[in-house]
Picture 1: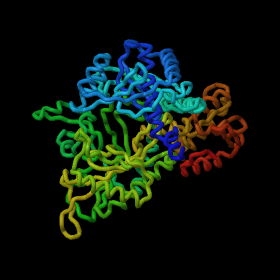
Picture 2 (picture 1 turned 180 degrees about the vertical axis):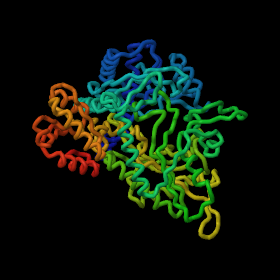
Picture 3 (picture 1 turned 45 degrees about the vertical axis):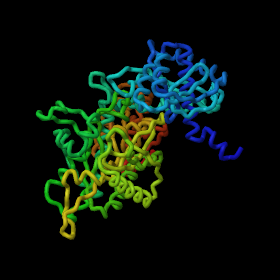
Picture 4 (picture 1 turned 90 degrees about the horizontal axis):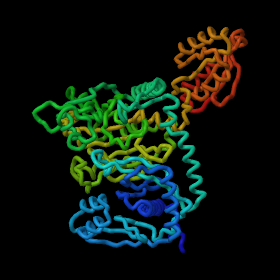
Length: 600
């Protein structure tokens, strides 16, 4: 067998891995139907890491149920059942699934064209509606290297008005030691999950009566985000950005001009009846672009005014599906380092390069860049949902220009079809959380359409009126999502410069309390975030609590330190050294000013 063919059927090959996991989802569905024939099946795809199957069961799946399913899956793998593909005309396919009592499958088939031929896969007594592809036998799957990891609720077809199903997740590998390694890694990931750490360390909380996707930033979380926001705003000012402050809502007429009303209405929070044209109707903003355009439109513009770089720390609102909510990563109200650059066509590449440089600088400084990937998000002309503005010719030109810019800048990117914004292609900087779930952290978008819709023009050097291009961009992205990734990256021990509490002073005796507060005032006057723990507790307990709260520096103060004007400095690694107070303050300033990721 050639090396090429070996690689084709290797678990290292993403396509083979996807096929392997897809077949595992069928094996899981077969196991469930053997154990509980009354369960109805919905869909069961492979995903980035593993597989799942959505099911409608008259009971709630428990960990004990999952163990039973795993056991039955192992039996099916040992049976080495052959997977056979066959097709049926649409009418016969509907009848076939009706006879099997699978209403969700019937609905899926009914959505297909009448002349369609529907594909199925059969393994033993089990048959499932599926486009494939699959392995040729269940014997290809290593039964003792399968693990069902979770069961969550999920709406049928993502619609909160439809049936609530149960989604069972699983993972599988060709070798048991690979599964063991994955489980160990997952155990570590659970420890670093921001949804756990952020709550334990009191960075944020959620409240049922407030709602999903609406986190409360507690003082620690609010302080860290404030530090990041001020730093980004100052950096943008250095790079020529003009600060704006725009409303949180607008009338529907603004969103009709921008296209959001036609292409994004389901993702907006609307105040009023969106279909009653006789009454005034408002909506909370899902993005800031149509608002910032009004700054440009405030008066006539010349080519000398361009590029105009507009920046804003924007609070946005998006009506995300409740099943998508996760801690701080996906929320319904969030704050973002948003900006729009209005420019002449010949300025596009240079300004795009500046946006990318700013994003890389910000991500590198906070320590996330090394794990980022880049995706060139393009349109899909076959998208059936009326997602995009513009003509094919306009899209081809925008994507050609952006592709050339990315190649000129040497960006190593993948292509994402049907991932573009409705008005233009974009460069998405992607990041994965500790569980491998990928989301967009920063985006830079080229827009050749909306300026014309808003009547934005400038007078060029030749005296002619021209339509500008627009770059939509973020520099650090959504602050809540960034905070989540930072908590996971650093295990809660944030770098000193962004930590909500940088120093905690721990007096050993009552006599040292007054001196501790004097030190706090001195450090506070230099801009540091400092607290004193004056409680009459053993010093060991105070130290342990500060360490558990991931405070970067502890100053242990006893009678000796008071008399000598010194401090016993203890860092998060447990290292302790006695030094003059002024020396510590100078060292702390150097670390914070450098935005160092590691303590000295």
